[in-house]
Length: 183
Image (cartoon, rainbow, N blue to C red):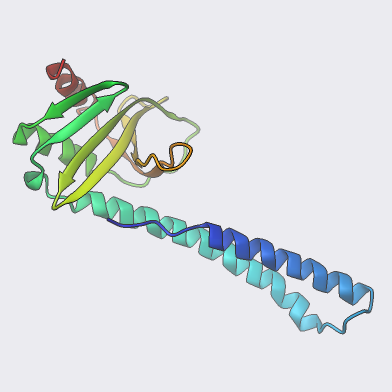
């Protein structure tokens, strides 16, 4: 399973570079340390490069996580669990699993449009010995759009990573039908 890059290192190096730039500038002004002008002019470029890398790595991680989900063969999933709150529904029908996973696998990157996920539910399944756990939520403004997160519950709280969105009028009714079948 793909592990996302730790962004802490990038944020730390950006902050450290900014501190070094500030110290070098102060020392030059106080004439305590002869600092070349080219070093001072290079530092903002270094910080800019680090910021670009930070966003680039984040985009790459999301691309890899979308690819990981798309590469799961629905036929190899024998059981899927839908969870909404405390209610869990086991789905074992291969046709229904294939329908649901195929819809979720149509996820793409969608730019933010000032909305948020609502009516969230979890989808958990195993394929080739790997456990996959995703959280989906209906968009607050577009009824046929669903946010897809790679879910994790490590540490103090949820560390969900948005990896894309699914636009489908069939997803909501399918999840409702499968959820009702388990009750």
